[in-house]
Amino acid sequence: MNVSYAEATARERIVALLDAGSFAEILGPSERVTSPHLAALDLPGAFDDGVVIGRGRLQGRAVLAAAQEGGFMGGGVGEVHGAKLTGLLALAQRERPAGVLLLAESGGVRLHEANAGLIGVAEVMRAVIECRAAGVPVVVLIGGANGCFGGMGLVARCADRVAMSELGRLSMSGPEVIESAHGVEEFDARDRARVWRTTGGRHRFLVGDADALVEDDVAAFRDAALRLLDRPRPLDLDTLEAEHALLADRVQRFGDCRDAADWWPRLGLDAAAVDGLDLAALRARMPSAGAA
Image (tube, rainbow, N blue to C red):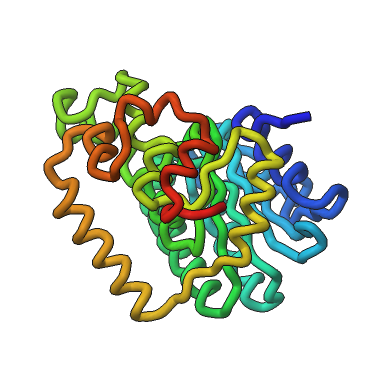
């Protein structure tokens, strides 16, 4: 039976993704590690501060995993939330599991915690890089209703690999942020079709920001995670220069595009047909974007 990744909670996702009975939570709700900032503002907290972290096994391989809970403050990163993620990544450098899985669902920094949240995101980014440098791959899975935006969007692109469903969204700035900063003429956040067309899994896969595009099914994410753990990206100068070249090429080829649908013909795709293709057909059209 399929289990919708988008509809599951963070704890349900991580338990279903890993081998049955293998997940052991670290700093679970019983530890009562909560945000001091929310309490000071007389705002309700959560006993896990919106992120579940722990150890488990993926097809018998030891992994560390974290899942953000979009139902609590949109998965926003505050001081404790960020510290739990950073601590897990530091633990991975010592224990050297087969990999770290980050089940991202976040609007970015928790605005109530402002600078503490920004510092938290910066520390998570550094920890991801340090983890990769230590030879432990980091794979990010994105398929929750809140997407992966702001600082967590940056964290995702620091990882070795990214897997998304077409319901997932990935970007630096969210639609509302862009509209607020540049006006509705630049980006209408109420245009849901355009929002998904621009930040959704299909487009991110087509342009190479996601390595795997999967169905909205926990088992599909599990299969993708297994494949991507064995495809770490080298963390070296060649990789960095390749990323810079990709971005420069992107600006040159697509800099004048006003909509994601403007990109697709330049990738050799029929823009009118992209939305109608099932995922298998879409992946077949883009073999260079990743086989996962």
